[in-house]
Length: 303
Image (cartoon, rainbow, N blue to C red; front, top):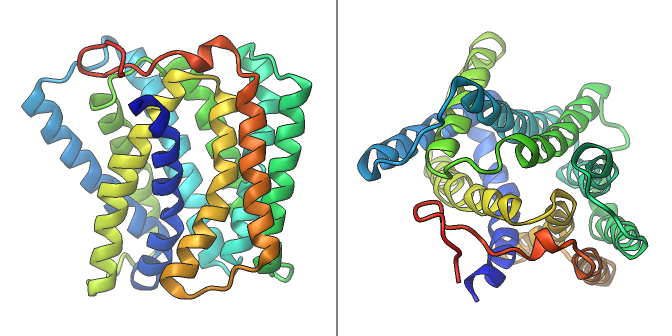
C-alpha cells in the first residue's frame, strides 16, 4: 500500500519546488541560493548517517558514480532552471522546456539501459507532452527571452535527463542516506565556486526567504529527492520520468491556491491528459517497474 502512494506523494512534493523558488529567488541569486540549500542538506544527512551508522560506498569508483549523478540531478538541473528564470525566461516557458524530459528519457533509455518502449507507451509520452503544452502554453510567454536564458533551460533539461539515466545505470543501489549526502555535497561543491565567481553572494534573510529555504531543504531535498531515488530503484527510468508530466499541472493548481494564479479549462484539460499519459506509460511497464520498493536500512521490501 505504501509503495503505491510513493509516486503520488513524489509528484505533490516535487511540484512545490517552483513555489519555493518563486518565494526565495528575490532574496538570493541562483547559485548562492542553491549552494546554500545543498550544503545544509549535506550537513543534515551527514549527521543522520553518523547517528544511524549508515553504510558508505565500498569504493572510490562507486562514490564517484554517486557524485556524478548528484551533480547532474541537483546542480545541473536546478542551476539551469533557476538561472533561466533569473535571466528573464518565464517560469512557464522554463517548465515547458524541461517538460520534454520524459520523451528525451524514453528515447535514450532503450539504447543506454535496454528498456523496451511499447507503442502504447510512446502514445502516452506524446499525450503527456501535449498535456504539458495545454497547462503551460498560455503562461509560456518567453518568446522574447534572451538566448542565455534559453540555454540555461536546456542545460536543466539535459542534466535531469542525463542524471536520471546515469543514476539508474550506475548508482541505483546506493544507500539513500549516505548516497544522498554525497550527491548534495558534490552539487554544493560545484555551485559554491560558481556563486563566488559570478554572483555577489548576498542573501537577504527575510521571513519569506527562510521559509522557502527550509521548505526546499526539508520537503524537496530530503523528501522528494529520497522518493525519486526510491522510484528509480523500483522501476524503469522511462516510466519514472513520465511522472514529471504531472508536475506542471499540479504546480499550476498549487500556484492557483497559494498565489491566485489563474488556471483555465485548457489547463485542467492538460492536467487530465498528463494523468492519462502516465497511466498509459505505466500500464505496459516492464516487470522491473512492478518490483517492490526496497527499504534502505533493511534492504527488505516496503509493504
